[in-house]
Image (cartoon, rainbow, N blue to C red; front, side, top):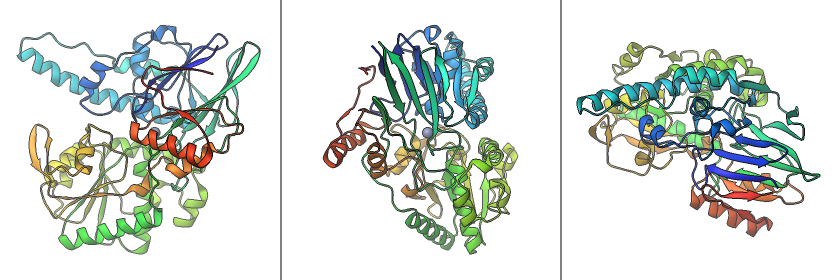
Length: 467
Ligand SMILES: [Zn+2]
């Protein structure tokens, strides 16, 4: 019998991790993601594997986002030594993501241990180190889309373009079980067809069991034209107030998309009085990876909006300022008005955006634009939920800046896109909804049944499902 056990992203949007077990495949892990929210030290201190990492035969990674990949170094430290299969571009991005995440974690740990020392407590041992990141990266085996590869004598795997971020894959695993062939499809994160730069998600049509994400299972995204118009309006209003704009953005995907749309506004002449600052060494590195894989991005979108562009960094906004050093970043504070600051982290749990908030969140002339999902428990979520004061670096700040949310920029499929995507399967597989808050998954499950008569399961954490 084959089973899949949901060990993360069960009725939540982070910590993606699922374990497939069958005699023909052994134990194969799909993703090994970290939870978001709280400090890295607290978060990692709580992460425990529900299995022995030494017993895992292989890891199949859907894409490089940390909520799908962040615990890989810990997995390696605790004894995993099998192959990590991922798309080529994912391996490039993973290197940046894991080293960045390790550096944030290890400096948080150092600070925590200094505090503990002052209290006479023993130091905390690191959950993993940069050596574990290096070991993890050496285990990566890259695979092209649409090219089946072997997992075992009786099991194979194929990646399809998920259209979510560069290198993102829908994973199809075929294995034999008591003489029968069984197919499991895992969407990873499924892209939004209206997203620029990324290709549309591939459609698949055969599976015995489908693990499908439902981040936006309870809503559709606003049309992208409306979102771009909102962005134009926000720029105009903020300019009239003599303010600045802060955009917390994920380094991977969202930043490049924002640069695309700001590039569009630049060509319209709407950026004349603005200085766009990309204040994130990581997002700059990631954008370089996107540039390296530029030919695999959606050429139609790019030709339409930025003909002849060959680079996101150089060709979308000619005056884009790349802020690499801490001095560069601090100098941004001196800009009185007219700065559009794009900085991480996307949910404001760390990174330079918190420093910009400290300088500007209390001033009503400024605007903060959220354009990505904000998980429960994050600073970003508190702001989106309308909190009037927040704590940043142990200091209380009044939230006087305008808070705006632009939903159309999502890199995830909206409800109707999810329903349409799953309806391509024939016959209907066993549908398992993961990677969404409970309310979003409940709504998606209801709509799937009402509109398409497709039944679905919403597993709880640790639940095993046979297929
Ligand atoms: Zn993702």
